[in-house]
Length: 345
Image 1 (cartoon, rainbow, N blue to C red):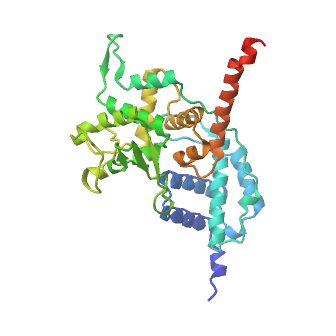
Image 2: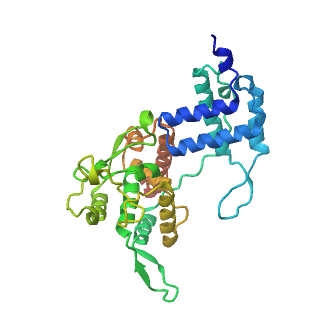
Image 3: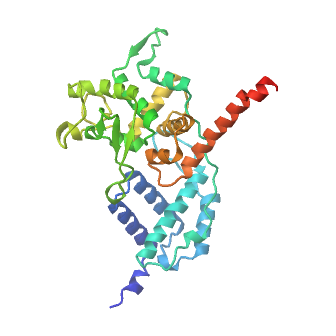
């Protein structure tokens, strides 16, 4: 019996669900799967009749993107009341990317004949400004790991923070390696080699999509990690050897030495925001440390191809942005320090 007619009559909702299941089975990260599900919900909100995927035309999808851009209103949920707002251009760009991936899968599954999303121009969006930390800001952030806010009753008094060793190790590792938030939270002790000053990073995905790479860090970061790990392992050489036992324990715990609960993205973001608040520095988040590492690496003479490998990028697009910023720094430095101009020859 020919199955093709039945496959090509599959409703949009079932096709999208099959796509999400497939991506989950191939090892995409929870964050990526959640993003696919958000795209799925928006598509089904627009195509309320749930038509067969094969009957949806290019014009239908153009109408969908026009609706997202001009009519759709996001209604944020959560404990804090926030006003409804339109979708950000970057969000619409991401939805286009997700749907293109969905259509590529659907063509491969013989649900449709071609990828209609690829025939629709990607929505444009303005790239966010890359703002790395300065040396002075980095020093202030490290100092803010050590003490609490000053007391209300004694403005000159602050308490020591029992997580200061952990927090300083986190900041230094982010600055010295440029790893992503999810990658930092996924590190276990057996991945760390303090003798070689290196860590095995498992990448964003799991299973087939898991991409391993090795990142390196300097002596000061190694010392900070050593101080942080000593109370947990009670040994001067905490390399986490072996597969079982301590070796599989998370490197960074969400509550220091209280239990074995790993740091997660949410707790990491909140931790860095709190440190930034104490230091008086706004917009402190994991990706800003990644930007700082990349730009400083290039400023200090590193090459773009090694940087791409260290950051775990699959292409050079983002690395080129970092390189352009570093190149602009060189041009500004030359304008200030030009021997001919300064000597007025």
